[in-house]
Structure formats: C-alpha cells, structure tokens
Length: 278
Image (cartoon, rainbow, N blue to C red):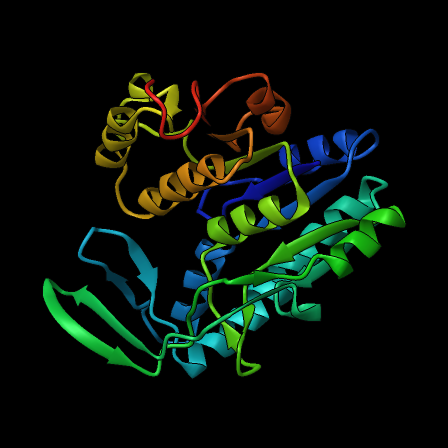
C-alpha cells in the first residue's frame, strides 16, 4: 500500500506525478492525496480578499478559515483541483474517484472555533475558525473503492464531530490515512527537493531524518521553516507510529514518485526501535 501526497504550492505541474501513479497503480494499491494552496490563494485574491495566514508560537503557518473561506475551499479543493486531477488520471487510463475527506466521514475530529496565533507580529485570539484536527479515520469507503479497482483521490476538508466541514492539514491527513490503511510508505511531493537547510541552496538537502535519534529530529525541525515544519512533524509522527518510511521529494522532476521510492529527497526513517539508543 502506497500513499502519495502532492502539495498545492505554486510551480508544480501534476503531470509527472499522474504519470507515475498510472504506472504504479497497475501493480499495487495507491491512494492519492492533494493540496491546493496556490490555487486557493489565487481565487481568494480574485474575490478581492487577501489570504489570511497566521503563525503558531512555534512558527508553523496555517490558514484562518472563516465561513466564507470554507465555501471557497470547498469549491477549490474538493471541486476544481480535485476534479482536474481525476480528469488527468482518467486520461491516463486510471479509474480515479475524487473525494474530500468529509465524504463518507473518511476523516473526523473536533472543530477548533478559537485560534490562538501570531498575526502581524502580535498575539491574537481569532474566533469563527472552521479548522480542526483528525481523531478518527473510517477506511470503509476507501477500501470499497480500492477493492473494486478504483484509485481514490482525496483532499481536505474533513468532517467535524458536529457534522461541519473543517480545514485540516493535508500532511496530517496523509499520515492518518497511512496508519489506518497500513501503508508501507508515504511519499510527500512539493516544489522543493526535500528538506533544505537553506531554501536558496539545493545542495543543503537533509537526506535523512532518523526518528530514533532525538538530535536528528531536533536538527530537522530547526532547519524547517513555514509550512515545512508541519510536513516534517507529520513525517516524524508517521514513522514513530509504525509507517516504515516517509519521503519528502521534488514534484518537479520526471518520475517523482518512483525516484522518491528509490531514495531521492529526504527520507524519514528509524534506524532503531523508537525510544531505544540510536
């Protein structure tokens, strides 16, 4: 079982990833998860608004999702971007089905109405946020699709405990799906070669994060900035929870998934049982 996440940053052509998925899905079960950040920002600005991004005390960035933003998220993530990716897979002979994580209650959890964050350098308490965390995964719909030869294409939002659409982190969604489905590997593709110590220096790639070595994890978290902090934390959590490996790799190269599985990018793994001496 393989789960592939394609980030939604600017500058990513999904074509090479879809080519790889078409080949890999011939021999193994594959679930595809995607984001849509750049398209979401573009459509937000087209509607005369600026994306509202806020930071946690640890430097992690997230989107403040009020009711109007959630309406747009449903249109962009679950609509436009999801269906274009399904279209691309269908054109390659893959019987793909597009879903959001709220369909069939695939991912559920509590909504966090109040958000404590740093905005414009000032601590604030923001209310009316339609965001949350994932506490439960129901794989029945995904299993049904996989068992009948379909390739599920999934994206946020998820479903709150009260039945509301909630914004959830796509990498954490990928992690929870991987654990629930017993994935052997998670491949997380973006517009960088992996975790870079210096975003302007491709040679600064961190090639390995050893989850059994606290110093390795600490160094990786220090190197990560912005949205990459969430990605690294999700990868570390996935391996600590039992997934064999997580690879952060470049979506902009030919055969990005197969190259990631061959070891390109940043590989998150454990050289020893978690909690034991590295």
